[in-house]
Length: 89
Image (cartoon, rainbow, N blue to C red; front, side, top):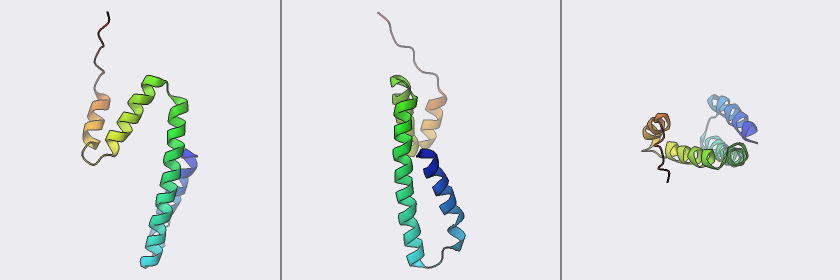
């Protein structure tokens, strides 16, 4: 589902130069949003299946931070930064 959503989005963006007029633009935006929503659902399902619990939490946190308007640069930096060691008792 995720790969199909990404492919559909790519094909829709390739069709963008042939869009003319407000109605066609509005229709394209609605279709793009629907495809993006379906792709996001597929990506979420893949993330739940592919990662272990700790990896899944880190991946979802990274994606949420990367999508925020103010956090994209910070997300890239924090993902490259090594994790803090946890204290063991």
